[in-house]
Image 1 (cartoon, rainbow, N blue to C red):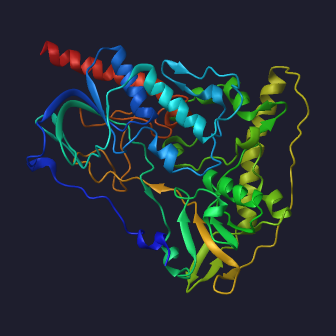
Image 2: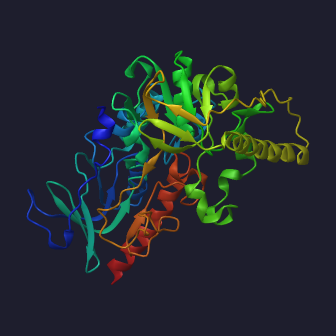
Length: 438
């Protein structure tokens, strides 16, 4: 049996901090503790440092940029151009602003940021419990516990791989990996590969396998797509000129649903290009609709492939139309569109028997679940999602940072996480000032 099934039900443990046991090392108090030492946590640290506010970052990993190093595939690169890497005090200053950082460059950028201002990070310190008593926060780690006046949760929202229950019905002989653990085609046994999910990860992994000459079977979901370039510019550059990235969530057409919407699939690989599933199908990739049922290795698919492909194309069309309107209104001289707009509609099998197919492995590109069960304060809803507005919660002194669409499109990215961190640092400073006066 493969390793994925053995870990499907693995969850982290949590404990009740209302009766904190004695742990190795004395209790330590900080005005502010930041949970998470990635780009969001370091951005928060930089902003607090500018205000001379003492703080500590607790990070569960043993090293900086652990997720980027160990939970991304080998050919991974950003889908946003380098000029959008704007961590506070440390904007991109390389010679390829319109390029796309590959994995090693992302890691080096984060390490350079750490070296730039030396934030106080304590690694190997996963927080197992956070509670509040009499206005003071108690933070428990395996070997120490801390108290803090204020806490910033900068640990993102991609905590636990989301594996569909269908996985239990796949043949035992089949290798199954989540996108978090996929590295390259050589990692998988010889044979054909099924990729489930067509968000950014699924589409990019499907292309990675396709380029390596593997026969790919792709279960297509309802993710939107976007053209990489249009009328002579990267679409990101057009949208930036059109002030799309300055739009706040309260003005977004989808409102509070914006953070939950699937990202448009596209790639920055080899300088950036479209990911067009219709073109992949023309090149030999087998496309299916969403999985409906799986019984003893036999998959039944929804009859929604055309609907899903049309939805993705229409999303790209809407973005192109908005750019066209902007070009017309501003009398911009732009070259003609050079994109391939395929109308190919591949045949979509209604079922597939994995037991008799040549498929030997499956990549689950089905996203992640948030896991905040260690929070002993009422700041999540019934589904476990944070309840916040621009990072502020109803629990006085507790904040979130680095979540998607927390304030703008760039909140969960290198682009605007620094703006959110600066806003929260101002709230923290005001609260500390009031405490000092009292």
